[in-house]
Amino acid sequence: MAPMSKSRPYHHGDLRATLLAAAEQTLRERGVGSLSLRELAREVGVSHAAPGRHFKDKQALLNALALAGYDRLGQALEAADDPALPLEPRLTALARAYLGFAIDNAELLELMYARKHEPDASEQMAAAVERTVGSLARVIVDAQKRGEIIAGDPEELNLVAGATLHGVAAFIAGGMVAPEAALAGVDTVVHHLLHGLKPR
Image (cartoon, rainbow, N blue to C red; front, side, top):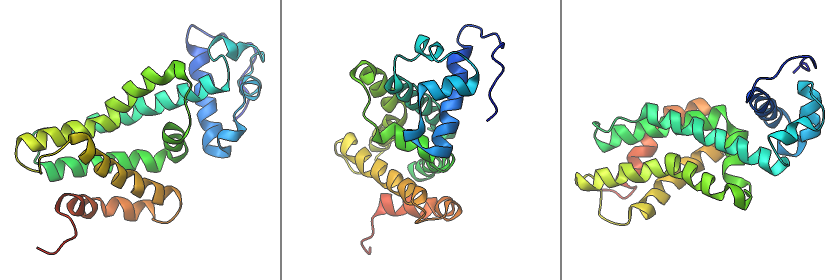
């Protein structure tokens, strides 16, 4: 990415967005270890102290990247969800949206789940998780009310569903499953998740 002109005027909020975009590009290309506020400042053409107005340190930058990722994941899941559908096609659409996000944002998803976040961001992070992964629990509650799945703690059932989807995402990120094959097999994964592997 070519450095931006040092004379470029930054309007309120513009520098923060520019830094986040550059940080995500670095994350995708070189990994989290390559992220540095000083390097980002150089890359976008501002003084090395300028990022400090928006991120007090690298951890604050990582928190902001993770929260931005949760926002995008939440939007993808919300766009895919149709409460009027029966459970299996509804969950299949959500699973496809989740895996689509995972394929397009593997490094960001890892950051969202695998990094420790500072205490100052814990409430924001919990709310972000609730808007995304927690939305599956609400789907499960709806299905329980309609008698489509077994009774039980929705959070425990959500853990099974979430672990299944994230496991497939991890296989994709690790090169064990091709993205196209994973997306093509979403229907089967959801079917087995809902109906189990035991012969009937």
